Image (cartoon, rainbow, N blue to C red):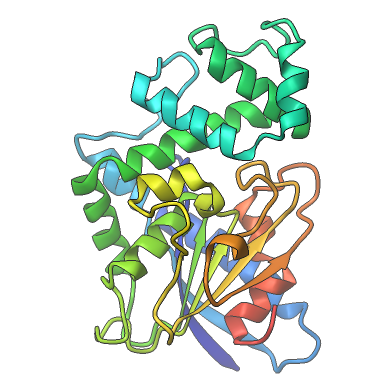
Length: 292
């Protein structure tokens, strides 16, 4: 049976698990997707998911459960709140903003620490994605900003993830903030065809990626109108769920070059779930080199 060497890059919120558990969970989900493909020979993966959250928990910038930097009770700095508001503004629709302006400020029971502007934008986004996704979105945007505004820490994370690569690694999969880290790693050529660790790499798969949000790209130093792109030898497949509130329900094709995209339906329970993305047919096909 063919075995495909894969590196997974997880998102934030994994402080209560371990590298062994994370790799096992991702591996089972990936295998479920691979087993669902009727037109290929049986195959599996040799998967490595570097537990970079553990790296942060051991350092001075602690992200463990005892030190939740992004909880509702932790006030945002002005620049942090401005970034989150920009991210909302990139995704909300005019009709939703107009609706939010007519509603009492306490409608959603949002944290009173938030400014009126951020609260209105959150209410507008909730109209599009009701059910509690707003606060989850805010938390994820705070996490993305944390990574992107701490260069030394981000470099440590990338180096830790890079150590998970081998000479044979063929595919890298990034979920949520992990997709930002994986793309960052490749665009900086810290793993590339010129590098012995990247010589076999041919595919990047991103899932539930916030790279489609202009505010995120701007914080990466990518100006509006500049497309996301990778070296020509790397195939990029992006998989998204239209109900995934972290992505705004949209893919990356508008802002990226030479990108293949596929939609999935992860269900209503948690459309942003890493495991639901990983077990999908488009991800399985991308891992095996087929069209998603």
